[in-house]
Every structure is written in C-alpha cells, then in structure tokens.
Image (cartoon, rainbow, N blue to C red; front, top):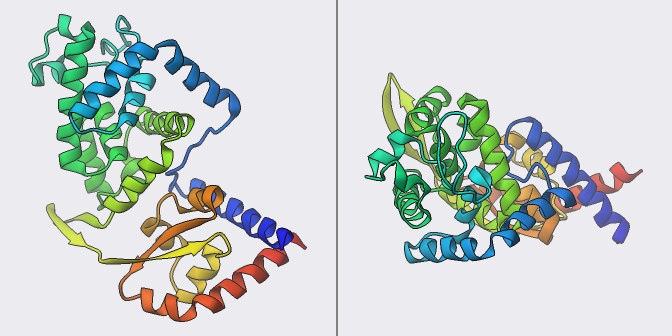
Amino acid sequence: MKTIFRNIFTGLMLLGTVVFVNGQFLEASDTSESSVKRYQGIINANKDLVEFIEQLLLQKGLPKHLRNLALIESHFNKNITSGAGAVGIWQFMTAHANQYGLTEQGRTDIYKSTKTATISLSNLYKKYNNWVTVVAAYNCGEGNIAKAMQAAGSSQYHEFYKYLPAETINHVKKYLNACYATGELQSVLSNYNSARINKIFFENGNRKTVTENLAETEINAGFNLKVVADELNVEVDRILSWNPGIVEELQKKGESTFFLPTDLMPDFLLRKNKILTRSIKVGAAIQQ
C-alpha cells in the first residue's frame, strides 16, 4: 500500500511540473529550506514592527499574510527607496501616495503608510476579490491589470498573468514563496480558488461577466487528475483552472475539495470508484 501511494504522489508531482510549465503556477516556486529561513529571519528580526502591521491589518479586517507584501517590498526597511522612486516599507510611488492623501514624508512614516496601505489593499480586494490579483495590482497598477485581463479575455490571474510585466509576475512568485515560509500559502490559494467562479470576458471591446456554476466534492491523493480528465473528456488544464492549487494541497494534506462545473459533477460522482481504480493502476505503472 505504501508503494502504491508513493506512486500516486510521484504522478502528482509530475503533474505539478506540467502545471508550472503551463503557467498555472499558483504554488510556491521556491520551497527550499534556505528560502524559508531567509523570509522567517527577516520577520523575526523585525518582530515588533511585524506585530504592529498585523494589528492594523486585523483592525481593517484584512488577513495577516498581507504583512508579507511589506516583507517582499522592503524587508520592513522604512528608509528604502527603489530605483523607480518607490519609498518606505510599503514602497509607495508618489502618484499612489497622492491618491490616498499620503504626503511625501508620510511614505516613510510607519503608521501613516501602513494605514494607507490597508485602505489601498482593501479597495483592491473589493475590486478583484482575491489576494493574488491584489498583490499583482499593487505592484503594476490597475491599468496594467485591466489590459492583461482584456488581452487574455479572462479575469483569472493564472490566465492573464502572461500579459503582465515580468517584474509583476516575479513579485507574485515572491509573495507566494513568502506565504509558504509563513505557513499561509494554502489560505491564499483557497481564497483564490473560491473567487475564481466569476470570469470576465471581453467581446467587441465590451466587458462581459460570465458566471460558471461549480459544484464541489472531496477527493484524496489517490486520484490522478489526468485520469479524471480522460474519464470526463476534458483537458487537464481545465481541471486545474477550476482547482488552482489542488496539486500542492493533495501533496501536502492527502485530500482536497474538488470543484467541477455542475453539468460534469454527476458524471464524476457516477464514475468516482472507476476513476480511483484507474488512478491507482496508473500510479503502480509509473513505479514499474
């Protein structure tokens, strides 16, 4: 039995590589011990400031993992200035700061800049409804996000990210890595997963929102997603687009909530035992 599950996990890990290559990459790209220690070390070295930031985030009803935005932006250094002119722990550009009435001096003020950041992040979340896109928008601006969405014909980050600046793509990677280091990655991915139902498409230049109704069930690491896709006659990428982060969750927890369109879910439930049996056989074949 141990061999079978090792085979299954091997298959999932191989599938995870496909996910990354195809740009699905809603997972940590660097889970090395050195990366984790680096991020944790910066947080521990700024413990009092981190606790202060987290308190203001909680007061605004925002998740504590947003402290990682300041972590990757500035390493919590209030006096840092980027080559582009962004200043302070939250790296406010002048235009961004002016938008919220934050003065030039205020950008280096920990309380004022953090309070402004919480307002900005809250507004972005109201617009995008997931923290992955919020982090991207905070880095490159709402205009670039809108252009990327229009180019991709979708409001899903894993579909429009390729149209964003390379710096922004790397910024999101860093954020996910930091959240992995702080043990909050799954929270971020679950948030993204629950928000991905509404998709925005553009037809003849006009914005059109299409709601894709999804049903949910539970699966364990025994299921091979390629087998699921084959049985349901859909592409694996479609399975992954409905379930961002599922490969990592299956690897980490051995089980996961599984989403499918309401018209496909009955077929899956009807064939669930058959799919699991096929999946185990595939896992065994990989090992051989």
